[in-house]
Length: 354
Image (cartoon, rainbow, N blue to C red):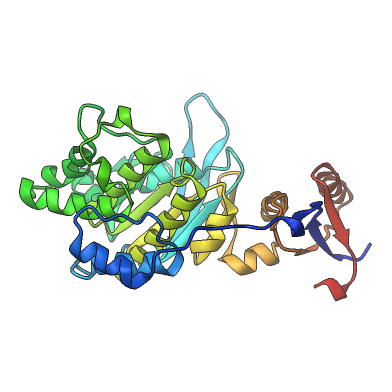
């Protein structure tokens, strides 16, 4: 077997499947709708048209400088455990980047997100975390000004965390009112972002009356309303249907590109990473094992952790071929080939397949 082999997905009848989509609303029509119709949504708007439509709403927004994230030698061991959730962890994210954090369950992704948000202290013998040029914590001690600093960070989790006694509009207005915005201005801003995520028609509904996807869109709107420097997304699209996911991803990408807001994405959906992120970091055993441009890491993974995630991506019918250098260690090679066999992947040998 050639040391540079190509793995691809066997999928009978994949070429025969045809996709049919409804006609997309044009960008010009979308912009006109946003300008003239207070109940307009992004329904039927896709791809680049979402970007143009969003820009029509965002043109008056204040352009901010984005936020950097820096972690140095951060350590986290949960009580009663000897396993490092974070092990001398180091991370640098530049202002305006859109970075994906990926890894298997237990790799440290959610723990990392909570540390960045200032929701969880590291251990006393650990390092320091700076977010949006603020010292969030140092040696396990969270800053006294953390509540003020959190205004710079928007969080979207896989659990919606909506206030059940408030309407959709009330949920989005809530953080704006807490920040001191007038009720009139808060309502105006809230309706803008509700239109952006395609749920303005549910403004007076209560969370109990919404589907899971609708609840997540409300949560995303609530984050966008406050114009954060950094948005943390933990499986933010996992509850959304494919069309809504496409619209939300395009919207997040537009926010990133036009407002220079840093966006950090935790996801198990590799398509999400490939569609919107500039860089990816692969986590395993509490450390970053590999990082780089998405296309580079996905096409030529170097570490065992990255190779396993890429191979898992190959289970999708539309996944591309990926070049992998086969490990020299016999046990690692046996594990790799067992994975290939178990998941119905095909090995193509030779440089002609690269």
